[in-house]
Image (cartoon, rainbow, N blue to C red; front, side, top):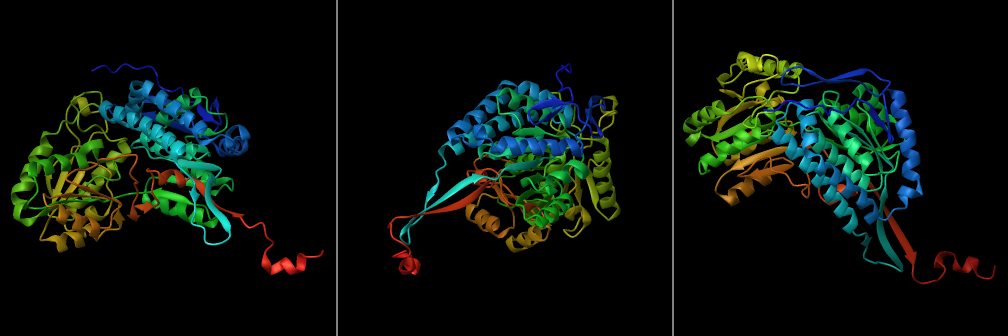
Length: 501
């Protein structure tokens, strides 16, 4: 296990195409595996943000950028994709140190980011405008134009993939983009900035500004020159952002929290279900908005299935993120581990039975890291706090259910509506259940599978709007209707008035 790496970004911000030291509060990136410091940097101040916005406004309106044909903009996205692919190992090292995720996972996320840039390059090259159905004497068309400046606010749990899902379509649509990464994981986005810079994107069109939500986040939402905000993060912050955006009538997309149900029917392939459940909740150490954190098992198999699940969970390899065998790596930060542990402690006090986990692993290898064992809680009710609140850690609650009507009611009895997993050999049943459950994504006999070509988003407290897919590009554009007269005649309403003048 080689832990040597000296290629961390130097901590300078990328402000409108220039590298410079920030003038805001200090930010410390910590390696979650051992608490060592990756980098201390100065974040962006409000003044830095205002300068980035002003320069983005000028660059976005410049014909050098605005006058490009779609296929010409696509070339920049392809170049960025090539740059990411050429640096997957480097990006993986940086992101693992920034977030604590395993190298295997961060390499996959980097490859996904490259695919996202390549996909939206292809989309903008091939997406047609609409010649709408003619219902009068005018030729009617619908065209799409850039919004202007887009703010992308991304979370700490999967920075490179989340960054790409916002930055790629926004640039493809012809906008300028200001990216604000989370303060706990600022370095991966700065590495993306290096790749974008080397791809030759015109100066001013892209900035990366790590900084506080109170200072930089609020500026990006409130500033009159920001035309759209795409935010991924917590529901509380998302609600506040939506209220701010409403004051300026600005469109937003909000990908927020989740408390996603996973449902195992008696006829399911149980081994397949076990593997999928483990992956759905314990991969990424449970730090995933779509984690399958509420497990419903049909009563006929509950007593046999749950012990197997507990035994399989105990076999998961908890370890250092550089270890190729590790399945569950440390949580992002000691503060976050304490928050996860507090959820479990409260659940047990409320009457839950701890089936496994529930504490940090013991031993020298784990002493300095923010590790937490995969945890399963039983004897809970769907109305308990642990079943209502997003833990964002490796914590699973298990409950029995009677039949289809029962599990649909329990699944929907929640403020969130982001994802759902259904395990059954009966496709018509999966279809009925999936259509009845309020959720942005349904997985049948699988979990946490994604495609950049397939829209993603949530319902209720899980957010508004969709990302990904061909329509994900249109979300970063303004639609304009265009009418052209085909008759060459004066409008009859005023023809007699005009004749003879």
